[in-house]
Image 1 (cartoon, rainbow, N blue to C red):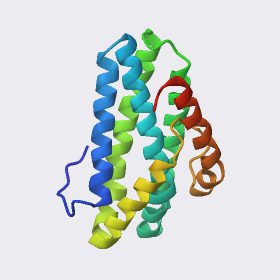
Image 2: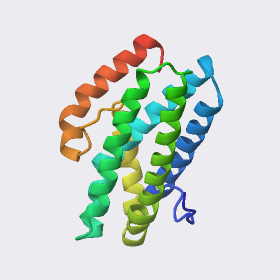
Image 3: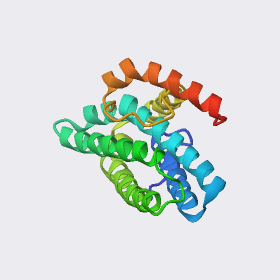
Length: 186
């Protein structure tokens, strides 16, 4: 993933890049363990990916679309990648965590997600950092954190737009968080 300089300690770009690094670490941890440790790492990974992507879809991508002007294709490509990642994550939930198929699919997903993050950092985040003031970047951080606090904790393919997240998201989040509490994943 692209290295960038820190503009502000509360900069949304730095916050999201930090999450990208955490996601990379959770992929590595999930792939390098087995049994209960793998399951725990995968649950953390799935949850972080779900809340992170929801916040990007609700807050970051719409703002980047505005700043990018007629380059809507950039955001559309990221949304399609997020849809594909959610689909694969949902498939992974149904597989034996220690199976060869799980490991293969998770490895492919890792590569796709890291490529996706690289594109976000280079194409969207750099534009946000270039065009927005420190105050705007800090406000976006607070908004992203709020969106993440109420986001679904599991992948929901087909819910990649701001409108879809706002309509379906609260119900999905409530169901996900209840399921997580029942299963002890809080």
